[in-house]
Image 1 (cartoon, one colour):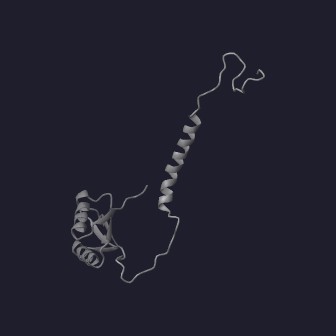
Image 2: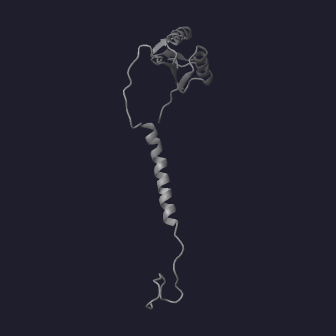
Image 3: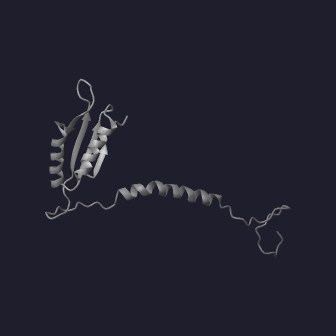
Amino acid sequence: MAAGTPHSYTDEEAGSGMIADINVTPLVDITLVLLIIMMVAAPVIANNPSIKVELPKAATGDETPKSTLSFTLARPEGGGGGFVLYLNGERVDEEKARAVVRDVVAKHREVQAVIAADRGIAYGDVMHIVDVVKALGVHKFAMATDGT
């Protein structure tokens, strides 16, 4: 550089000049990594509140204990058509099952039913039990399956 000239950031080689552009690629990379981290971390944070409190019990609370009815439809011994109905592990006929469901629904507002049927049971028989359960006031039910 010549003496007396203001300081400049240019190279002395011919054809090279000052770099005036900003490379935004690293900025985009960092932004995408932060976005991915937030997408992964958000459900964990939402499901695990940071302040855990143990709420007191109240005698006048609206929460009633949940009740679960377990229906099982099995093939009759010796083969043949139809099914054998079990309610909470006890063999019952349809009328007895209706009476038990009515009693449970009258005592508990939040009744859940789990219906398990043998693979050989006709689809119509399973749907008949689902209809019976729904008609008696049980609106939450699940169909049990083998997870394998």
